[in-house]
Image (cartoon, rainbow, N blue to C red; front, top):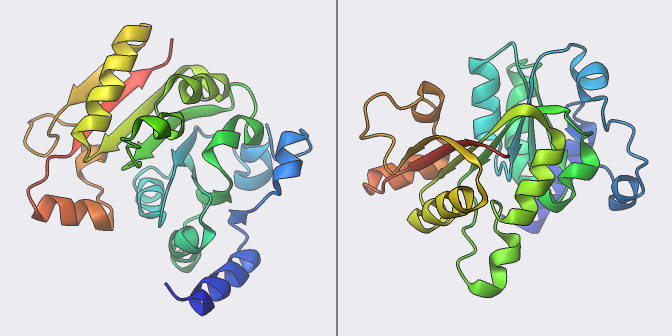
Length: 224
């Protein structure tokens, strides 16, 4: 994407009422006004709140919002030029139950209050295979602690990935730390009875993986 395109998208994001871009200082200094107030201030209801972490273009968040109109969805990514597409689609198609937050995933527990979130989706994250990158792996122990803080006690996390490495790493960690694995599958499109919201929504890259016959893995779990 050219720099002119990026600048245009950044400017357009600033005009969207479904895009929120707090400064880092606002978050870490506990001054962010929407923390604990997302449903009341943004969605104007008390419906379940669902996050997609590392939402990319926002396709999954938008499609989930269409499929579940009685839930509220927030796609989170640091790259605003990417989720511009999802935000624009939501406005064009008048989808009121989806919003986008531009911030680092490491700050998610600063953007949301304790027990504010009902569910988390992590879709096709970078597996960060190199050992030095494990601190950025989105299902490592430190991230799970952050998620546990913001999730309700019965909240769940969904991991959908084309990376067998990420799937295996996460399953091993969950079992090792005593978390509750509700569902796990190495190839959701070849397995009967896979959750419908997992197989009926595909991102652009996911459809490419499927064309290459790459298995898509899925884990649904609770953090103990």
